[in-house]
Length: 455
Image 1 (cartoon, helix red, strand yellow):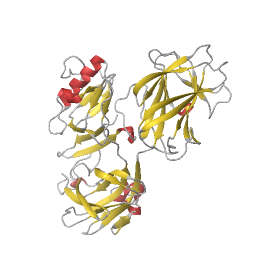
Image 2 (cartoon, helix red, strand yellow):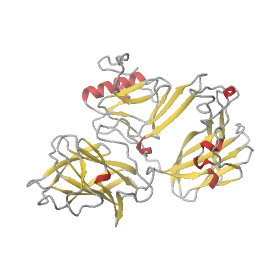
Image 3 (cartoon, rainbow, N blue to C red):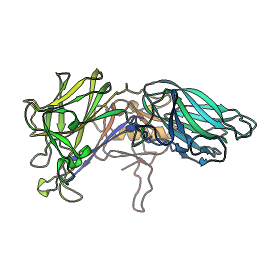
Image 4 (cartoon, rainbow, N blue to C red):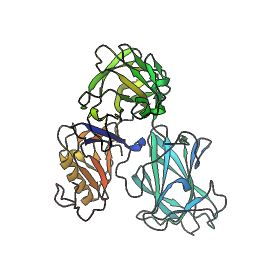
């Protein structure tokens, strides 16, 4: 987990558009190409239906977990929590996946409420974020109409985690699950995703620039801004300043700068200050934005109907910024764009890079260039082929990898050092399951020469 995919799709005149996908969940912390029983987790801001704040712990209802392989929701056993419980762990692959939110890396006490009507103990396999599988024994609870608790200590990381309870190899399932509770967990949000950042709107920050919007008119800058408002900085000395409400060491700035006259984009610096001191010059660009005309769109400004205005720049500070820190983007004399429109900034606590999971292959062994200069497509395809043949996962270390084609994954899990550290980018980059082919399509052989590969 933790691979950022930057897709650069070639348009007409050589310019590009870009889509950044952060895994984990951006979902917050991110899992790319998960096993069939696992799904990216969506979490939330306040207590939602299915998650209850109780003293010193957060409860996650089993009926709101992601179910695959056979489990179903029932309500026949009395005294269950919430609207029901989950049963049907009767074959290998039967799985319930809980998305739990944790404030910091560490060991956490995780309590599972279950019922087991059998005369002997049953077993399920537990995985935290798809790793470290272990079997847990669930002793009998009597008639099966009585609930009991099973508590384990699991290593979890800050942000959203997936906890999977599965009928795996060596398990014998056939239990019912009521809920999962995590001591010291974070209460997930009631709407949208539980994300690892705090979002600050530019129009609500300190500024001497021009607040634009609200506006929903197609072709106007505010129409694509969050909240339909933004701040435009067009003169030297104009700024937007964010005051942190939570500590952070990373920032994502959403912005727009004008296109060039030929539609190929501009690149320009913008000054970044922390607590009144110049920290660095950000490099902003419109090379990947500004589309014109009707679908399938062009780079030609003569096509009118400009849209797709905004891009993002990521900043990893070399220190922790405390609550109250002031982070300012400001137009200085050397900042050359005609105007800078700032939509928002997301500040987060970026964790250290994740290391390789035990038993995983490393892309470093296959000669992939982590600097992004040389095309890494062939190396990644070779690594995926070997990982599939040996039934292992593939770890992609920190770095920027140029990828110019689809990577097809068939029962292979890819994990990275985190979306801030492991980045795949290029024209046509994509990680895909083994999708069905039309009659006129084939999987060309990949570089390993032994497995089907993408084109």
